[in-house]
Image (cartoon, rainbow, N blue to C red; front, side, top):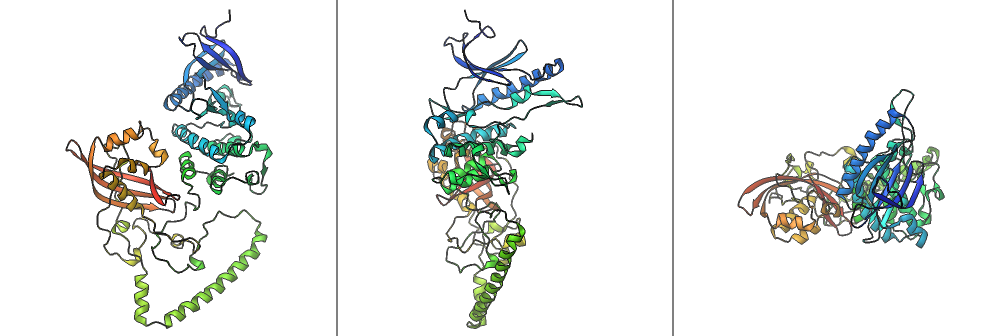
Length: 532
């Protein structure tokens, strides 16, 4: 008769062996179905009673974290049990029937861009959830992502914290520390290799994983730019779209400051393709009519920054540019003077005044401090009052009074090469959203939310059903009091809204919500990515 592990688990076969222990596929004999499970056997690297007690405490804490993670999302294995036996530590986890991404590529070669995008779109919300719990996975790679057979969803396995716990030792000062770096060479960035992982380290690993899926090449097979440290891989992915190339390039940037700020940001950009404009360029509402081309001094480049070149190579380019700028200024000045002389003084004055845009009242009023709505179960956007026609001083046009532009910002006008479109303002987007809600058109309202916001389990635990339960079952209508712009760029905007809920019970509840919007370039609209 085969010996049972912990008098309960019958080992079927060994799945993996390594420096920290072994992983088994087993059956739980105390379950009626003989449920299959994965058992991870872990051993501390140092045989020291003092260290063992510390490892024991940390193991219990990390097991509790794994229990919470697996209980909240179906794309992380469920922790069934944990125990200690003969000086070794054991985790009993859900058995995920499926293939690792490594096996997938081995069997069929590189994946299509649409397949890789689908994998990323499913993994990024899980990564965002993990990061919000204060946890860094630290070993995201094709071997640790399983495509589950029953629903083709990617499942994230083998978190690094448990292995780090097993690597606990006492340093020369007598303090406990980890003696190992968690991660896989090639799939972890430089800061993680130095023992200082951050959240964007996981995004780097995801980006490298995506390159492997698209090209079939391991990181060690790819070239690296010796000047910048950036990975050179585009020539191995000639059929990949510019949007996907840009998303992955930003995820795998050598320096963390150049990567996405969060998994949520990477998800939104991947979903809507908003990678054309850098987020630091201030958004200015373009006029509906065609404007004359902007002069060079008011034009900023909206294309990706050029690669580094030594200073002596750039000096000649800079001299040519300055000469062109001076010549262009002289030509432009002569044209303007000639135009002015051909018109009467009165007409020149009238033209200069009319060219100033008249902003709405909401654009110049002080932004109210929002308060959390007492019933914030669903996104609560709003409609602005009909006060947008009030005249203001031209000197304050196009900028909110609480966001006065710096000289640098004021020069950030759209490039003359970019077509001018009649783009809705962020305030109009919020107003339209609430008009949709008041019309009881909940499906349209739901579609104005970003996928990550729709999947927000706190606000929408049951997805669309939670959404219509709130707006259709509890709220009768909204009385909008104020909508004001806080800040905006070409890609994002923040809008404050103040209103009153008219509940189905007859009760009136005041509400105040801050909306975070994202520009959906494919559909030329603002969408709601979060609320506060």
